[in-house]
Figure 1: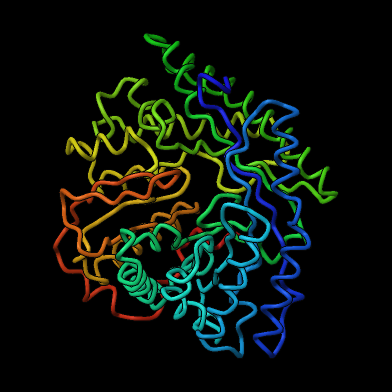
Figure 2: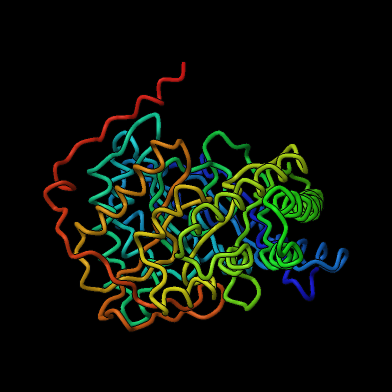
Length: 440
């Protein structure tokens, strides 16, 4: 399972509260942030490696998430916010982790001064750091959609693309716009340590598309009930393994174990693809009629099996469909089988949303805002987490590629509708919460 089917633990993510790092002096804040992360995380990589060796299962990434940094920025301008991002980056480099996430703000219902400073600082922060990841939650089922924030984030994405143009606009690969963001997500770029979380905790995100793919292939010709049972049994097995390793890492740290996120997360490696699972279910290629139904079945099986396997399921828990990180998705785009519009339909039934989608650099901010608003609408109406990680690659056009290597992969530039949505996205204010928000 580990050697042939690409099973690994995608990430063990230490969540650290920075609420006690607040101060009126930004230099003091930076010092406190650096000291706390390096103190608590100094052995994170080594302890995860010990667990890997003991159980023979790879842990692909060791990460840290922190309290949304906007909470530390009230009273600061964007320059001071960037200083905090640099301190986070220094701390991440010192302890040897892959990424540090939580350069974030929660603005679904409005802004504080700190929120505005952080959002304004995002392009510079992401262009001057290597390991820092950023996210902003612009909507929720309870609050509706903050369209002022949607427009701000579209402009921040464009500016981030411009500032990191020399590296294929890679800054945008570390920036997520959320609706209904969860507080215990271990996956980057959207992870942050929620304000209701404990002082420090350990969350684990599993993987395993290759394991599920082989199980689905073994069900060729079987009915849907048998197919579902096979997938659930497979997910049960990898969830148990993932939680075991996560708990062992937490024990070594002497900190509470938080959750196991049972999301199937693909990688650019062959055989580690969500798209290939959908094809093995019987569709000719991703984008064919039936693709959304196949993905819904897969996602539902992941959730049901995870809930049976563990009482600590959390995060987003489902199936991810990032384009650049999935060879099957890339091939479908290259063949013209998969469009952004079909991807959007698939996000109504999968774990997150439009993820690692590269579009022409000439795409206007208002169009990106419209795409974000559409995803947020799916989120608030269906009371689920949705997100957009979109890359308007500076200087690129349809037919070109962005290539980041490693986990972030390689993405073809996808065409985007040229119809104008500026009259809608620039109205300002908040799209009201839907009727399903009235649950009390």
